[in-house]
Image 1 (cartoon, one colour):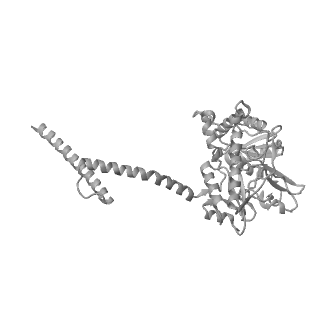
Image 2 (spheres, helix red, strand yellow):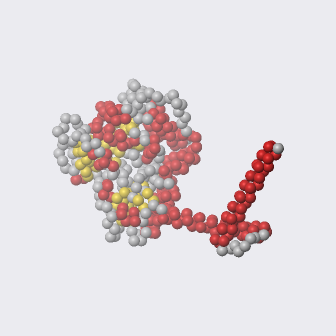
Image 3 (cartoon, rainbow, N blue to C red):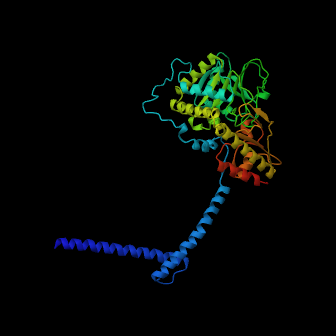
Amino acid sequence: MAYILSVFAVRNLLVLSLALNVSLILRVLLLHDSQDGSFNGFFFAEQKEEALATKITRLSSSVAPSSSLTMAQGDEDRVINLDHGDPTMYESYWQKKGDETTVVIPGWQFMSYFSDATRLCWFLEPEFAKQIVRLHNVVGNAVTENRHIVVGTGSTQLFQAALYALSPCAEAEPISVVSAAPYYSSYPLITDCLKSRLYKWAGDARSFSKNGPYIELVTSPNNPDGFARRSVVNGSEGILIHDLAYYWPQYTPISSPANYDLMLFTVSKSTGHAGMRIGWALVKDEDVARKMTKYIEINTIGVSKDSQVRAAKVLKVISDNSEGPNEGDSFFEFSYRVMAKRWKQLREAVQQSGLFSVSDFPPQLCMFLNRVFEPQPAFAWIKCEGDIEDCESFLRGKKILTRGGKHFGVNPNYVRISMLDRDKNYETFVRRLSTIRS
């Protein structure tokens, strides 16, 4: 008897629950229809189905256009941030490469601080060093013979290491560090960050006339304006650092191998892998290379081996594709085509607007790509014409974020714009720029 009652109770609960759910569903439907102004009583089943089908048809016909319109409006109204040189443009190429650059690192590997204790730069992975030399030889953009390779956490750390290594210790005051304006905006910040007694920022190299030793930073192609650079200070005690982050064939014709005492390169701008945080220096003088290594040892006790191994794999794939039978699909061919297209789009947008101007570059023969072309820098150095005095603020009002000329030691009617963002952002930018009239 107790069993029958328990079963009966369960059945009653199930029926009650079902009734409540049906009631709730009907209530929601009635409220929804009454809000639409289309319900005036109970419907028969056929009328409900017909009304529901009509409503679904109406919604499906209206939702798709409104969604696409919202996307278009959102696309035009959203802020485009081109202040940083984040090289996400290269993502599509490496996605197509799939597993070619995949690296699997077992948990037990690379546990030691040391890569090769017999090397001057003891934390430099041998395979990475090998691929650096190979890529420079393939491209022909730098002399590697009789050079020491120092690896760093990006070229920023290498720049700091170079300042440390080149600064005289016995001087009564810090050595002056200069660069010709417009200069890379981070140079003053990095130089004076630690308020070192070894070196200090001294501004524009063109106006520098102080006697005594100095360090001149030569960025070629230059960031931000893209022009090839040489030292400008006419002094007998100058020490040069050549930042060649952009001396690669997607940005500028490779006319000859760079042959300087201290040259800085970085993975972020050569291959697009900024997140690896890897750069390298080619250093002629052993003592300078040893001091740079010492700085990095003190600063970070070396450089990530995981990043070096991954970078070595990427450089190898680039060299293989550049030398192989499918070189038409090589990294540098892809990058060159994208940059050429983007600069064409930018010049057309500037012409349509009439409020801006960009630099023209003389064409040169690229020995690597075996073609003549104008430089197509990683950054566009844009000038606002007419009565616009602060170009950065003006473009910010158009929801385009840039970096103004004052950060580069020149007038604020210039801005630097990254050419390396993703396709969608860049195309939105040039479309918006072309419509700006005032």
